[in-house]
Amino acid sequence: MEEEEGGGGGSEEAALLGQHRREKKELQAKIQSMKNSVPKNDKKRRKQLNEDVAKLESELEERHKLELLSLSQKQSTDTEEKKAALEKERDERIAEAEIENLSGARHVESQKLSLILSQRQLQIRHIPSDGHCMYRAIEHQLKERNNNVTLTSLRHQTADYMQSHADDFLPFLTNSTTGEMYTQGERDIYVLWFKLQHLES
Image 1 (tube, rainbow, N blue to C red):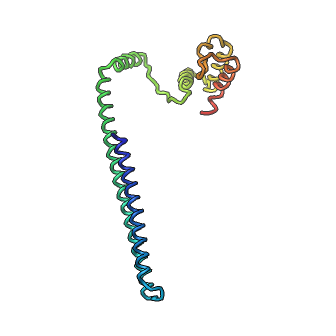
Image 2: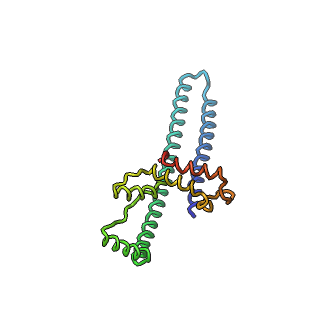
Image 3: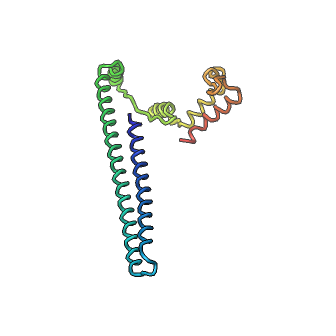
């Protein structure tokens, strides 16, 4: 249904542009007729004719601009109304989900976990999902224990461990295209890529 409405907006604009083209052609025909009716040697009437032509062209151009602007504003308003309706619907769904979650298993589990953590004077710490979150979480915990290991160091240690225990990781290193396990060369490239990821953050 939204596609039809969106398509309708496009067809409205196309229709308006088509109408504008017709009106320009009609005006040109009218101007030509006006020019033909005034003798070329009648300078006074020719001057007046040129002024009238300029006025007609200017008025038509101005009207076309206003019509396009009006259509654009209408489409913009329609889009904003649709967006507002979608946002309202989304907010309602979120509110419903939050109400359901209060009695859901996940919420109950979260409450239990929070209670256990608070009894141990611990808390859940949010780590941004940036491709390094596992390492950042480990880094954070190690820093809490005065171990200043870095993300880069953790990545290198992990890559070195994976390389020295390749057989343990082979089942998990597969070519996403073929589904086959990595060859030695592919595995080496992966481990190198794995080590260098910190450079892109």
